[in-house]
Length: 295
Image (tube, one colour):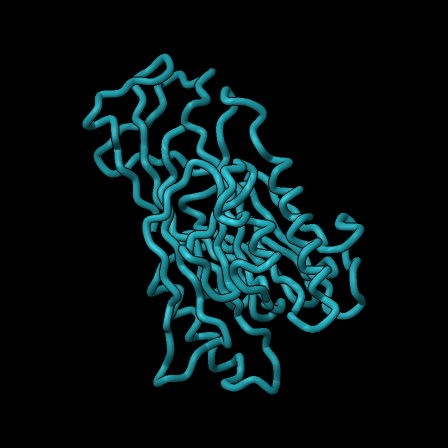
């Protein structure tokens, strides 16, 4: 659930031409490998799909990046989780094959922009890369809907033309890297470099430009402190502002939530959701609560 703290209630801060309120926004971001609906995996998708819905309803993330979901799986979750909008496509384009879907709460965020690119030498050509199991990134630019809390007035004056200070936007990137099989280490490393190029292309030009935080989530099939991880976050000694940060300190597992921008980590949790000791996937979801700070 998204929470707002009206800081100006205590500070009396004004901004722009009208009386404005500075809101501190917290959002919960989840990454979750659903495990594709393989006929050999137990329990079957027909059993574990309802567990996944129950788990998501229990923890109520605001944004979910899912991996491995086939069209049937994404459609089922979309139908049951009606408070979410879902975007994304199959990794060869269209509806077939695995999706890197992004779910976000329809009452809280508006979709500004989204796209998918391949983890390949030709990232803008759908389906490019290895013939079997190509990999993709789906990303979205989301805007916070300015909806006043109960008993509060709108942050906008009646004539709000020319006001820009209440625009709150950020990016979400979702991916699933190549497996750890021999021969894919170079592909994973170059995938990390490609993603960093795409993320940094959205950097603000100067301090007068509003900062848009970035969240990168996914199953990276790599270990913390390895080459792939260091490509994203550095070696811990650099103050390079172009690098991301890991929400887990130190890094954990292969499912990561990385970020950059004026953002603070409030909590990190690897969710141990199971039914009588049986798990709905071979991955445990990671859930991180962030606070978007003032510029």
